[in-house]
Image (tube, rainbow, N blue to C red; front, side, top):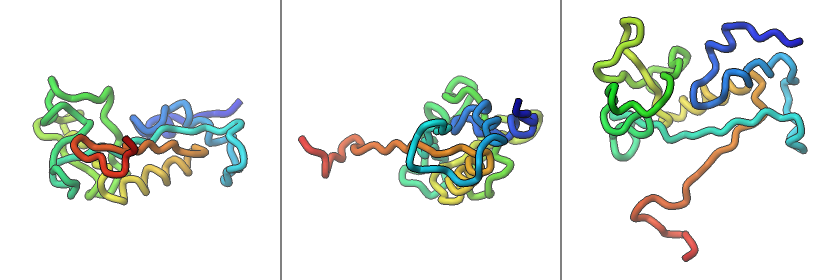
Length: 146
């Protein structure tokens, strides 16, 4: 039986991988056998979260809420633990607090954000991430077969 400390569960990334997968860490080697998917723990990784001021085109909230975040517009089930992210990756949520402190989410735009996420996945023995890319953005279809 593998013990899964509570600190691992608390550090699991909301929206990046399910906390249960973090318990898999104690049973995995540090090197992944890339020749097979058998017995692997894979996660989906969405790098589409944006905040005003993060340097991304559009300079707007994206995927955290429908418009400016508020109790009525938030579109995520849980706020992520951003304490291990660089200040450039963190975005304060205007007018929202968690236990009396400003609420933060992250922006996927800074390269440091993805680097931290993938370091955490390695630390907790996630074997791989499935990355999704969209080939068309509304109004831009160059390179798409018609």
